[in-house]
Length: 207
Image 1 (cartoon, one colour):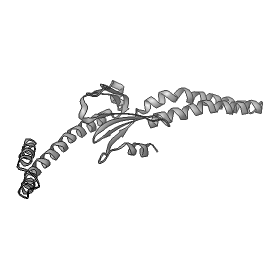
Image 2 (cartoon, one colour):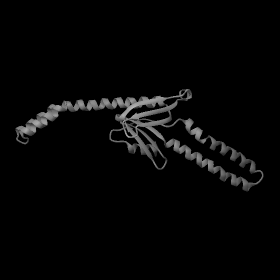
Image 3 (cartoon, one colour):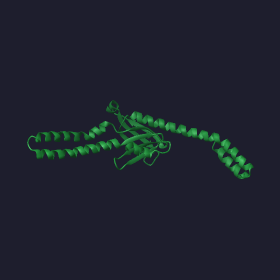
Image 4 (cartoon, one colour):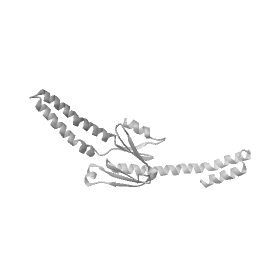
């Protein structure tokens, strides 16, 4: 479902290059207490079954509380995604209600990555993206494989510039043929001499 939702956010000719999440350490640190509580309650229920079955039934109901909380935390972690496309960087979060924050690669001014000793050891870190947008700075904390994320983003930004230059060059190559067609229209009396000269000047200025 999450992939389908992300695909719905893609523009024409936009494609995903990389999808990552926060490191599994983040998830583990969130659910560790819930896991311990579940184990304690299960042990208490097992012990209670030999004495008083209504107490055991009540214990099973209590187990549902941390279990539901753990499932909720897992879903929140799973649905918080950091995405690099060939046009922008996106942060998508939320299980039912979605929150999307994106930055165009054109507006990315600088990227800062920081990794602690354990971050390098277990491959996680923080990526700070400084942009020219209203948000200014996007901070992605403790994401998995931050080096790959940063590299994919910088490569996409460089490729975006290359594509734009390529389109501009292609458009510049078409200008002589456009002027020739305008000249034919001028000869046919469809375009006046003044309109022809004005449009010709505009096209030449774009070369």
